[in-house]
Image (cartoon, rainbow over all chains, first blue to last red; front, side, top):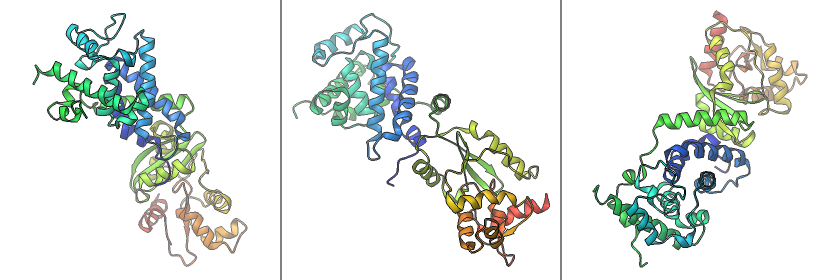
Length: 166
Length: 210
């Protein structure tokens, strides 16, 4: 097949994973709208997407931008790369605090919301969307190695919270 | 690598517990319906399609904003037909039944013996040149009647183009609605049909008995 897939195929093949990513990054309340905005934007841009593009990475890139928009609209600040430290993560885990500076409840029922944003992005894009770290890095910035570390730290932090579950 | 491999971590970690379960089917269906409505409203739904169960199998119906652009039999393959639409018309294709409501209703009436001609906006984007002029002529062959390939060639002012008429019928993007099944061989045999010869027989029987 050299031609482009019908857009419907993208929705059926990648829709569930992109929704999981939106939920992981934003929580269930904002996830549906972010998903809708992502696929509507993608539909608009689709005819110009190169036929050999990595469609899943492209969709996650759009979803990431929509997520950032939602986060900014809600007055939450994205955690800058340099601020993501183990200490900050541990503090968040210990206090159960979210990253929201205004203390808004992000409606994330799971431990994922306690991760620093960058770790949350890295975990979602690598483990839920299945993107290689080079693609994750292209989306969240930094090097592939830094993305790998962020995902690794995120998983390690999640394990700490879930230690009691297991 | 000095840090722990996260994949190793994952081995004893339940992804679903940590990251939430995969979305339920009804959730995806609701999002899909919302997407098609938004796409239609934004003028981004270049091709809408649905399937329709009929006595001649499951048909694929597709329409552009201009009109019905494709009716396809099962044997043509849904994926193949959609991929062709993606490359020939637009890849902005979504399963969106509403645009096909009229076509579906009229086809059901036809199979029920209650409709003799279709009254639908048609988009002949998938046919061009001589084939298009053949297709434009075919509705003149009335319900329950047949015409030979030769007579159709003569009717479109190209009496030697008998084979080309056959090709136009074989590649008709809108079978049933554009009645290529009414074109048969001069010796009275039914000849080929893009839905298969049995279906051609079935359709002519239906029209003869209604």
